[in-house]
Image (cartoon, rainbow, N blue to C red; front, side, top):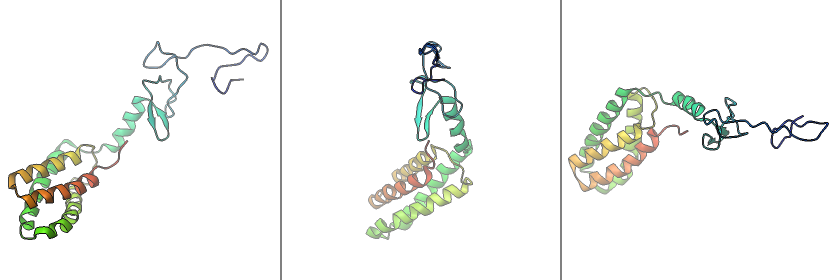
Length: 168
């Protein structure tokens, strides 16, 4: 019979609990009763990572994260080049539009993020959005136009949100 609060074995004849300590897998001197809800290893409060489904160890978090990180090294180059070229092209088109650009920029941001996503075959990476927005900012510095800068600020928000992907 076990005590439901401390998970210690209770001796029914004496009514006392067995106080054998359990230790963290990574830190062998830290006593704990906390377990990873995926691999069931003992983890201390320093090793525990809170997730929406409970506490997990660092190894389980990393193995789950690698499922969602599908990007290759050359995808960053493709994303940077495309975002730079598409931004310069759009800023060239937007020169004559003026204040109507405020309504067109979010649409272009969505189109641009779709083009980028399709060009890398919808692979995901947590830094893709930063690369795209960074090269969009670089393109705005090259062209250096007030309306172009406003255009980049508006469309970069949409691109960032659409390329951000899944967060763990």
